[in-house]
Amino acid sequence: MWWFQQGLSFLPSALVIWTFATFIFSYITAITLHHVDPALPYISDTGTMPPERCLFGVMLNIAAVLGIATIYVRYKQVHALNPEENLIIKLNKAGLVLGILSCLGLSLVANFQKSALFIVHVCGAVLAFSMGSFYMFVQTILSYQMQPKIHSKQVFWVRLLLVIWCGGYVLHIVTTAAEWSMSFSFFGFFLTYIRDFQKITLRVEANLHGLTLYDTVPCPVTNERTPLLSRDFQ
Image 1 (cartoon, rainbow, N blue to C red):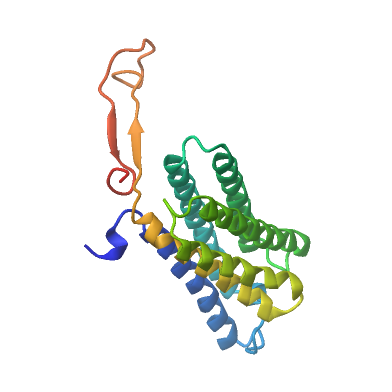
Image 2: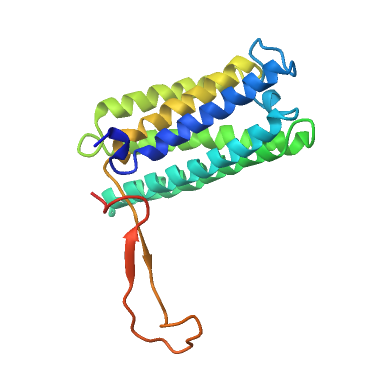
């Protein structure tokens, strides 16, 4: 069995690869058509003019969906591992909300270009980067709280370094290099999920309330439990 076939490890891998491909493809298209300066433009500038903005928008929306799926699986994993730790439960819920808000901001960036609705685009970018940074910080705290029994110290230190790297964006918020640097710190952080996600799978359960779609009186039926994406939680 290949590493990406274990559990749900393909989710964070797909998120990072797809998002990276979004930035690179839109960048190459914008450079080829001479729409931006090739010397490290803002990420958003590579998705402003057609046709690259169409590619940028569609691919970034898919990246937002992959992000929500990854964040939700992480939430369920931490919840299953620490069902009675109040601090971890609160941090885990906070991380879920922050992560979803970050993905919402990513979707706003994808659908509202700078040249069309600048205010909405900036709000989306701030939401994506700020909530994403807080999400990384919360997950790093969780990694600290869960070591050494559940998380290794090495994973905690790697995530802490990535959070510090991400924090450097705040000090250089006006530079394009900082924007690209922060994006790569996000990529690195989600790559640390791969090994964790090898240990989890999810199921979806269908609860039927009747034998047909027209029944109004509940009757006993057999429920169906099938894997959502893979095998049982391990």
